[in-house]
Amino acid sequence: MDARIGNTRITLVSGDITEQDTDAIINAANPSLMGGGGVDGAIHRKGGPDILKECKLIRQTSWKEGLPTGEAVATAAGRLKAKKVIHTVGPVWSGGDKGEPELLARAYRSCLALALKMGLKTVSFPSISTGVYGYPVERASIIAVRIVLDFLKENTGIEEVRFVLHSPRDLQTYKKALETAYLQKN
Ligand code: APR
Image (tube, rainbow, N blue to C red):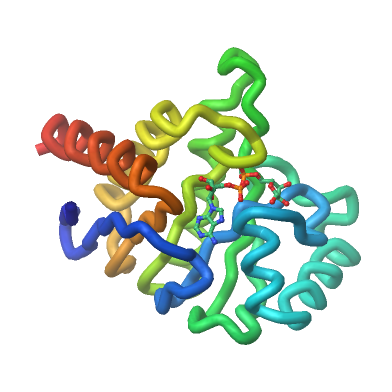
């Protein structure tokens, strides 16, 4: 299912985020920015050492204590098709009453704001926090879609926001969230 907000397309695909040809690919990182498993591992593995090199520079200059949850930074994309990788840290799920929803919302918003600031017209998101970090995918999808729709209603300049889901089940969950939010908004 695709949707439109102004001049921006919102698309849902099932696949591998490292294969996406959007200007920006969002990495579901951890505060160390030194890589990990899941999306983080795939992006560093396929993108190559240039990404980690810039992550280390960011840790030495801007975020000496690590990237706080909800913040976003950009690096080169190395061998990936994208122009830039935007790294963000989603919240670890701890039951839902420790500020996780607000932190997840902030992560999505920070990524979109940074992409806009850098003139990156198309952005691919994974389902942030719903893997290792344990965020229930249905709850996360509702937040992700709402934040993206709200941001795009207030900001022009991004041409496509693509959610790249790693399983048919997650694709269905995000599809349902988008349909529900889209119908409410229009
Ligand atoms: N492409 C798209 N989606 C993917 C891919 C991929 N190549 N690999 C995994 N996913 C999906 C997972 O199935 C999950 O739905 O991305 C979602 C996020 O999962 P994680 O990558 O585990 O990210 P997250 O839950 O945010 O946990 C972040 O995991 O890899 C470590 O260093 C990372 O500590 C950090 C933590």
